[in-house]
Amino acid sequence: MATVTPLTPPAPSAPVAPLKVAIMSFAHTHALGYAAALREMPGVEVRVSDPAVPDVLVPGEVRGRALADALGVDYAETYDDLLAWGPDAVIVTSENARHRELVELAAGAGAAILCEKPLATSWEDGLAMRAAVEKAGVPFMMAFPVRFAGTFDRLRAAHEGGALGEVFAIRGSNNGMLPLARSWFTEPELSGGGALVDHVVHIADLLDALRGVPVASVTAVANTKLHAARARAETAGLVTLTYADGVVAAIDCSWSQPDTSPIWGGLKLSVAGSAGTVDIDFFGPAARGLDARTGAAIVRTYGPNFDEAMLDVFLSAVRAGEQPQPDLAVGLRTLGVVLAAQESVRTGRTVEVVAP
Image 1 (tube, rainbow, N blue to C red):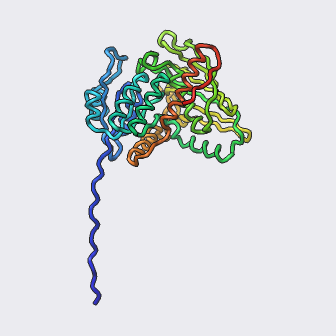
Image 2: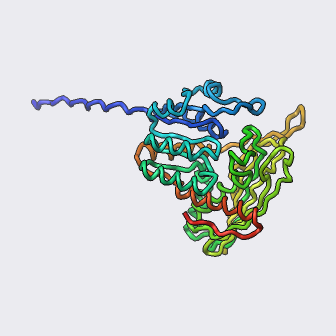
């Protein structure tokens, strides 16, 4: 009779430590969505610090520990306390002018970094951030969630497969409401500017990823006719990018949605080639109707959450010790476009874009 050797059960695998993710500042409204998404992700611990709360807040604005409690996430009183927690990754969602300070702190702590757009408010700060990240040897990713839309993936595949033929012109629009939920958006000392800063970078990133061709020059106009009594920065702008291969892209980057709009705004892209044109409305899918009591329009958008898709890519890269895209070089290239647009508005001239 054959002897049966009992199977040896496999040794239990060591438990995987949760990934510690720190959020530095609630200044940017995207921080709320990031915190809520991270809270629901398995294997992730999230902690926030928001010590630089202004003395005067917008009516209804909640910041600091009160907002962390409302979101159900842990809170640290200071950035030093937050970094002493030993985070694996840090998300910087402060006012634009404070990105450099917080990125340098996070890099010095050895954490991977996801930084809200734009990279910085000056070229000097952008280069200093690159130096800090390179010295620390940590991964760095820009927060450009729209590039993780499935429709954009299909556009890239069509372009790379030659379905559009030779691209010759591009139109993009990023129109939104005046961002009154956080007053610093319209204070140039903290934001670096207005609608040019807030909205140009998203489309500049999409085109950077789509084409891989540097922007050679920028011509821009802007004004403050919209919301003139409520904003200290430009509220409407039109930016024309000329690429090194001669392709021209026009970007409408205005805060043109009225306060009564049922949605914050939208982002659209139209790419024209010799063999065809593709139009994308990134936030277009929606259920629409009317409030039976008031007659006001109701719009409920649906579809994939681009923020969650971006966070998945970032955290996967952190776990694997890899560099995700879009990286700091993309941040510098898109910052260069914004700074050239601002100079063009000031001078009335076409401005060459500085290479990183």
